Length: 461
Image (tube, rainbow, N blue to C red):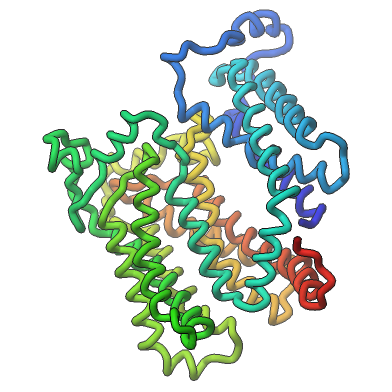
């Protein structure tokens, strides 16, 4: 990975952590108050009964990316003991944050936050160590083999991996038998409705049983997986059609993948295993297959390069993004509805993180950041091939992301069940810039490496 990119990522992560942990920047105390502030500092570890596992995990995960990137920063510079120094650097930043938080009345400083942040830095460093020393060569070999011979299959694999990770986020794993029982009882086996296993078989309903079924959610899933099904059909036509197992693979992939995703969610306490999600995935994949066949004349007429094959799935993804952002279409001009979105939490960037660094907050941030990314990535590649400079592209894609995010969040301003947040608008803009960055990385780093691989000059383990 390019050292310059690692440096930029490290800088961005540090700035994000500092911003996130020092909101609202109201330094109410001064240095003369330091003795009394030190006495108020929570030096003791909390009682086990007072522990919030999600808050602990949130503070750990907040520093995992920093630990990973810090290790890679040191590793590429051949620094001694990169794991030790990346962990200690995380500890130092955490101590600095806790010190600064003592002067902010709305913040609480505690020693256990330092322990959690240090653990996150260590975990990120360990992950980076495993990647750099053991997994990098294997993953690089697989990546460049697929990119060289089967790029559309690589795209399908990335989609499946990302969605698998998304399905098990925010990683609140069932760590007790009781948690696992609760997850099973909350599961839904009734298609296109919600009647939990607990309500149907044990006369023990949960709060979701009393809510009306939201039909827009399976439609959202169908639209998303239709794009995935279309890409799978591209893979079939190019790579599998003449293979004896081709049709079987095309059918088996969605048939097994979606039940696998829902099975994983049994072990995630904040997720619900739902048969409707399985059916939505199957229907979406089948719709993608059907669209591929129906649009064949249009596709052949407009096919000038392999990238043109992605026009339809990209358009389908854009439709999904719009639908997902606007649903459930419960708009209202009620003052009560509008007042909810005018809270400070929603108007100040990342203000929700100030209240609680929870796993769901972090997941929501990454989800929003990735929402506009596929469109920006495709558009950036197209524009770059037409000679548009990267400086122009960064401006265009960031503005496009901000505009898309602003439109969606403005619609949610009138929704009774959705909350409009300025953070999500900024995340859309960040996703736009990230798409351009990935094209830059592909051109400057991946293509030269691919040429070395094709020439037999790259050792891949």
